[in-house]
Length: 557
Picture 1 (cartoon, rainbow, N blue to C red):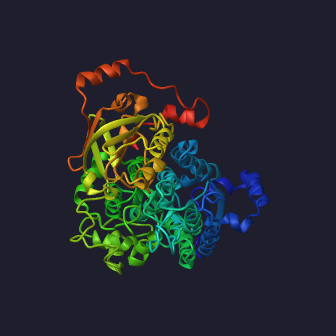
Picture 2: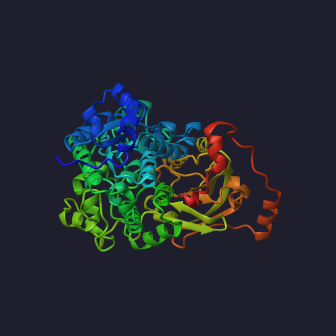
Picture 3: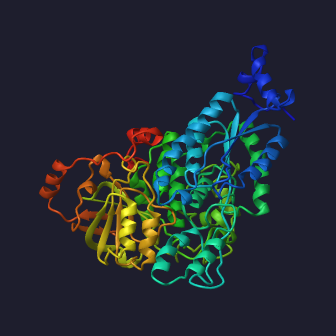
């Protein structure tokens, strides 16, 4: 085998002056032969908390097998991985988004400190995916992703969800179903034990699966990696291939910024629109692009949404899960439908262009991956709204909104904390025709920009999805469905208009016109803002306090 490049590790382990460095690596079990080969970082995110990551230690073994077979020395280390689902609905939800920056920094520091020549990132879930992508673009050493895949759906045999394939999003609606008598506690326990069927990302087109699909679209992993379920043996074989492939990327000096072009990010946004993906991509894609030296603004999302059809009716809005998408043709199948929209010249880590992948793709189920002339919706699944309530923008997942709510006007019910809004909902205090406003939940105010899944799921389970809207400067889970507008910017903590909304103010929503307005005279708004003072910070120490002081606005990613 010809000598493989060691552009970074040679500076750490070669020569008499590095005798101490070699001794320390030998103390960890590496041999002289190991240290003569390229050192490949295997950046894992396995832990025993997050079901999406519980199997990644096994995948890492197969990745390392592939690296060794292709002439490299794999060295594995871990980063943190918070489970958004477990963190949901309490103070824990302040932590996932801030963890994205910690994850990126942890990979950056480990790679720089130890002189790794290339990197394999092993990830599955929400903030770990973009955090690792940010690190890959920032470091710009040869990198490839091994994605953990999706969790198999639950299929209840009786009760409210009988005959459906359901994922975790439905469990957040169960408290409301029990309260309204639509489900018994016995059935709730049955569904609880059934739905989370094993390892992998929760099975709908929520944030984790959306991000995996977009990483594949961007070209940072091999075809079909995003949609192969976590428990399939195919995933293990693909992990071996990923390990081998990183050595090819190193040998040919192919780096993330060679792949992560502006056109590649446009492809990812169009894929997001076709899938009806999570609104969290509006935060993550610009942040990832920034690390690659590329600027992406909110207008690009809206521009591409206007011309990209929504093709896949995925959960939470539709009936299909990631298993269905994989069996229908996976991401290459969706690319094939979008052939006339995508930049086919974009390169991928597989060595194939997007055009090459499209030529080889097949579509096995046209109901799951619809043709462009028979879409779920003629436009993409996400829209950017602006107006007097959101001068710098707000985000809504149109794919999950009833057509009856595309134009809506109602009285504001204002809350400074998600838990208070949920309590009001469960107590029957929210009436049809109202708009729930949850503020001081933005990046600075939360801090950490909590997801409002408990609130949105409660709205839907109480049967208010076509009569009550929700507006927040926080964000939403990819599992959210219904008339829910998030990312309102500027946020309340920065003195944005949402800070001075009062109970009874009329809020106007017009999705087609891309408007979010408050029907209050301008002079009244000005007077309120002059008297406004921010609330006392919710966190005054630790990492979240530091984060609240340095984080930028949601419209910047």
